[in-house]
Length: 216
Image (cartoon, rainbow, N blue to C red; front, side):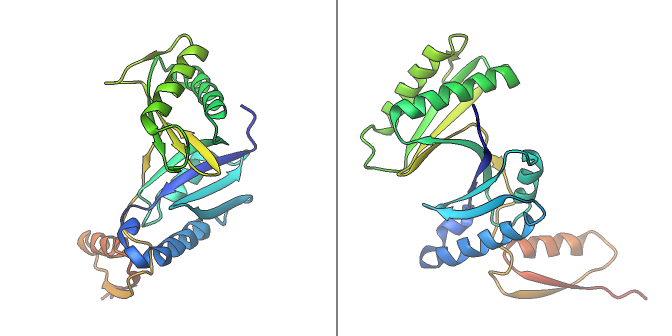
């Protein structure tokens, strides 16, 4: 597959529960991700339809970018994904190419498709999307077989209004709330492990921390 960029889907976890305040938390999360990724050239971070999309130049180190994103408080999970048009034909072709790569890189032999139709106007319902894309993969990758209980590859298909996304992994982030969304705090750092752990846990709740240490 000839791709020009890495695409990462970033999920917000707790931020999604903030009701009317959700846009504020999402904006703060985007700013935190942008700040941490400033060291990389050719990276964009945008909110779209309840998710955050990070796009990076294809020549950048994908694992290094994932590692940086996962450090941001408020990030629940990250998925490296591929993008295609929101038509059954385009999704099927992209899924076949994705699974060819999975066979070559990871030796995948079995798979299962899980489809989600975020765009409810899409004419095919989620269970039928899963069945049709699974059939397309079986036809295009004849070495594969379906295993609904313990597959080597759980293939996710996320159908949205403008584009659709195909991915396998949901890599865990720290979770919590974006730094700076819950005021400021002061911690007294001793020489033991308890105070750094407490500081980390406070930061995970969105508190901007100033640390104080006395050396006698």
